[in-house]
Amino acid sequence: MVTKLTPKELEVRTRYVQEMSKIFSNPNQSFGTRIEQLAEKLPNKDALYFQDSIWTWQTFNEESNKIANYFLNLGLNSGDTVAIMLENSPEYLFITSGINKIQGISALINFNQKKQALTHGFNVVEPKWIIVDGDCLPSFSEIVNNFPLKNDQIFVINNASDISHDFIDLPNELKSISKTNPKTTFNSNLRQKALYIFSSGTTGLPKAVIRDNFSYYSSAVFGISLAQLTPDDIIYIPIPLYHSGGMSCWVLNIISGASVALRKRFSSSEFWKDIQKYKVTFTAYVGEIPRYLLNQPPSEYEKNHTLKKMVGVGLRKDIWEQFKTRFQIDHIYEFYSLTEGGGRISLNNIDEVPGMVGRIIEWNLHKLVKVDQETGDFYRDENGFCIECQPGEIGMFLSKIDKKTIFTGYKDKEKTQKKLIHNVLQEGDTYFNTGDMLQLHDNLWVSFADRFGDTFRWKSENVSTLEVEAILSSYPAIFNSAVYGVAIPNTVGKAGMAAIRINPSIKFDIEDFSQFVVEVLPKYSIPVFIRMSDELETTTSTFKIRKLNLKRESYNIEIIQDQLFIWDSSAKLYRTLAKSVYEKIMDGKFDDITSELAVQM
Image 1 (cartoon, one colour):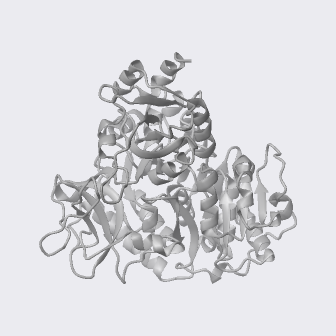
Image 2 (image 1 turned 90 degrees about the vertical axis):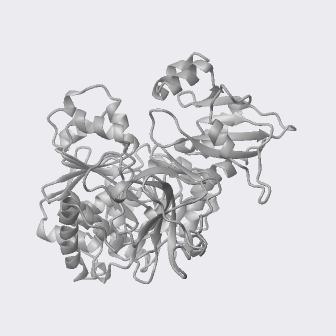
């Protein structure tokens, strides 16, 4: 059953079906084939802007060819993996495109990860080669001895600070490499693995999600159908390319033939300057970006700009309306998607209804079902089947998996199996459990409610509570810990909070602990609040720590007797949560508490 489409939904669906029929007519396609075609048809058209440099489709193709030919000479075979740990740069795109031309797989490592999680990320994708940039060398050098690779299998690029290392200088290696198209490019096909992108999923350490060429083609064609992108558009990518959203924007670029303006790191103060500089018409956002931009003082650069369309995730209704009004954006397209879904598990707000992530227009594929919001257990009827939500109710979002489904899942098949739920609505059916709680509204509209269980979203990143707990509990003075997300007024997502139980035989030093979290956790994973607890409540059956009461009490100093600390990001130090700071937070002024914390110094 397909729900009756709105006029806009029907229009987008029609364009999408027409364009996908062209894709299906030729299965031998990939990122690499598309780039070579653009280099032939539009050799002098601008393809990429970065800082003050420009690459045409011809020069972009040539840079990608050098990567392809070099790794072919090294002996890369179809299906071999190259792990890349880089900040946004043109080389990021050259490398992923070049590896794609020879049917290799690029594993996109989150450069914010540290030590345990970073080691896990490299090991799980089993790379034959690793490429690291200069900015990432310090973190990488701390863990390099954990890998079986030799130094001549590790390459360094963009080492502007000239950090000393014992690896191979890739730019120097590429000087004598041919720029001609490799003979392998058109050996590609849509079903070949293209990338490993990491998702926190809902449990444990980050998981490597398989993304094939088709999943990106399909997502890109939908995005082009939605925003009606043409080769005349200029797409701005301010979000990390290791994110599924960042790489999806790049594929939008190569499928549409548009130009892309790439930024190394997002900057709220430079955003509108970049829009003006590159004459950007389209960009992507993640939840916090619009709020950061709204918090900037008015600027001459935000007026008379060229930006017309935006697509992204996590935009609250109030921020949406303020943002669109202040910056005069013609279209904002919110959507819901999972990296694990390969572009298939998605919802889209084509009619641009503020606060909604989309409509479940394919009710036979996607379901919202009732769950116990404390345990995660699915409620079942007298026949043993799940109970579907009614308008106004919040439930777990599931997506059907069957023989017709194009679903790649995780590299670790066992991890994929753990995310599947069986006998949902009839005997023998199978659904993927997204781990996300959505609220159903009239006419099958849905809004995002929460991430369930062991994951929360903060600073536009998914944070695994189990991963942070394992790392915190490795600190000698901590006996055990419970990590969970807590809401902060006037912010997007949930901030991390950790209740920790101290080992009474070891002295706990808050300054030393502060230094520890800086060394082992990405900035977005560092708990914003710490609660010192004498005991942590456990369940009677599995002895897992119960978090429901901890979440309810949050960081409310009016009811909590335990000592509470708050993270001072400027000083990189935990400080006692004072009443004045707490009151500012509750007044929606979390972004302004830095000066208040400084008083405690």
